[in-house]
Image 1 (cartoon, rainbow, N blue to C red):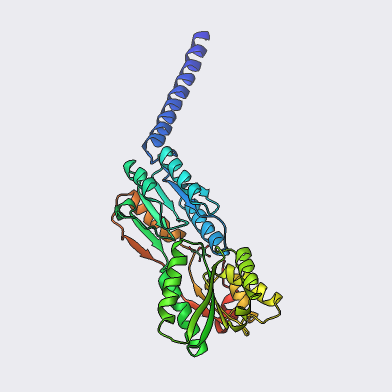
Image 2: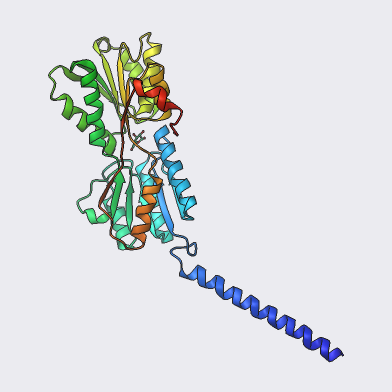
Length: 330
Ligand code: AHR
């Protein structure tokens, strides 16, 4: 009887031990076979510029929620608008051995050394939102983002139509050296160059933020030159919204005394259009998470992808604003 009990409990332990061993083998198998440090999950290091605008916050949300939906191990870092922070993050992603590096470069130049390090480590790089200027374009695999030159052209075309090709223009420029600031200026100037009576008489950076946009325009409004200005072109909605505040505080009517056209098409811009304070916003779509991770997954799988992927966008005026305001997600 004792011997029988001993035999059955020994068998129970043996079976339990065997099951534990099998389970252990399964776990070891999955953690060893995946990409990067998180088992089977794709590991992506993403360096975001910061949170300088409503556009950027929506862009971050779109990227983080899409990664979560797909079970991607996203190592996200916020550079607070500093290139040196982005370079540090990219170096840390290389050290972590992530599967793919993606980033939205704050400025266009100065990326070659760190991109060469990523290439030497055989980690593919996908550019998001903004492009870089490099002598060797094999340093990144692909770039997804808006056509900033076309956005500038669209803003200028709207202004030309709205004013009968006649405007004395002030310009609030984005972050100096950034792709959208350079390209939007280029596109805008290209179109107004066709009209002798459309001229930029003042141009200053507001660094894509509401606060700096307001401060710069507030100072400008105190100058005698401001009296002749009939229109403001702001490189993004946040700076336009800051300037609108400054125009009101100076006792003028934004949208009437000074026409305001900007870029992004965030919800706050739609509100300003329904109030008659902003006249037009050209869309720059931040909701690119889905398209971005489609690309990243293909790149990680070694599939061919186009070198440049564009984002589709529209132009909105005060006539469209009330109808579209409710459905605007950001
Ligand atoms: O790169 C896109 C630009 O960056 C958006 O227009 C601006 O709002 C953002 O900060």
